[in-house]
Length: 564
Image (cartoon, rainbow, N blue to C red):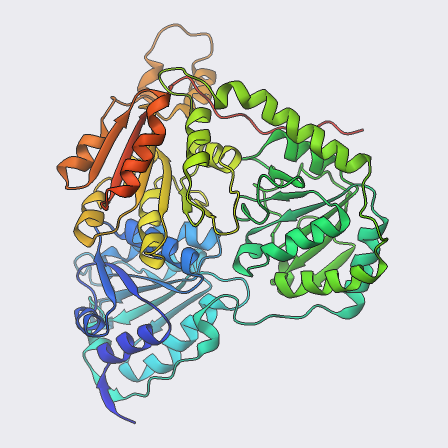
């Protein structure tokens, strides 16, 4: 085997596993970064470790491959905090940090704490690398863990403040790339034939079936199978936020996002179902609005790549462990010979059409509102009309997630939606990471001013590194999602300044973008939104479209139907 440094080994291994960008905060693995440059890997110097983690997360989700974030020992705790979203969203991020050698332990070493325990709750795999000759085993295992099964973040802690005690050492090292673990999913697990037969029988018997498509559908590239199965049996399709786009949202059988950040028509229809087919969804609190939608006791078929998730929240009549795409294909093959010559048309499909049409009719005045400050519903409608056929839409959480998830339709198979799993401020840096993964595609970030303030400094990163995203800011100069809670806390008390708890000064982010060398434009009239979006995309620069929006516009609360 050739003798090489740990730095060269790490860089060549990253290259072999398809990593095209490294997101980092100094000082970490300088030798690796030098070797990475020789191999054509982009190095993105970030302003904070959390932003680096979010960028790597966005990169991983957009590429379906590993994203990489690195930080020195003192920044390791910050990087761990940034992995929460990747962990919740099942995103394959490799975090690499340094660690002072054992001699410094228990002696109040400057800037040093025990970082390893911080990574335990937010990773699938968390390992020490104490010597250069451990790299071949542990680095390959990190990629296996990140990509296999339900994907997720992993962490390697290298000896040395900057990981230098591993990276700068030499050993006889062989670079071995396991191609299987360069992309999700690494394996297409087949379901048991008998379970496919049982599931197809249940679907045929159901009078009001619904499919709930989760993020596993996107990871498995199973959208076409979802649509085919839905059309075969005339089954309506609801999605989680992670599964948004699994069916074109202008399709007659699409009912929208279900759960907490949802359309009321989707919650209503899923609650009325007599059978729910969950595909690639861990049936968590958000997609079910804390296990209220669908109702308890409903018949369930669940398909998942993680066997421990099946039946966890809704006992399954048929539990199928398998890859979403392959399992749906086997279902389609089992059902096709039994179909009648004419497609099923029944009161259930009529009910679907009626409720979805009613939802759209209720919102039509807001979609077309000429109000100024601008209504978010109008903004979403304009983005929907503007969105290129191959765009990646990246959304922050909170109101941004509700507005974008429920009101911006993805109409073509080439459009994708990546959403924050819980940490406000994720959207903008994640969009930068996504753009690094798919530089040929338009990447549009949807956030509010509250979310954008978190990592405003990464605008400089975007300009310096030529990461040309379009960031649309629903700027109501507030955290207005918090207003109702603040009002409840104050009750009927007239005294006090309640706005101190949720209102910001009004800032023009377009001018900040311009001052950093990006493109910025502020929009105060609805009629100007479309032109501003087009100019931003055409600018060839990191762009900010600052929308002056209504501080009193609140996203709809989740609908919990009352079912007899």
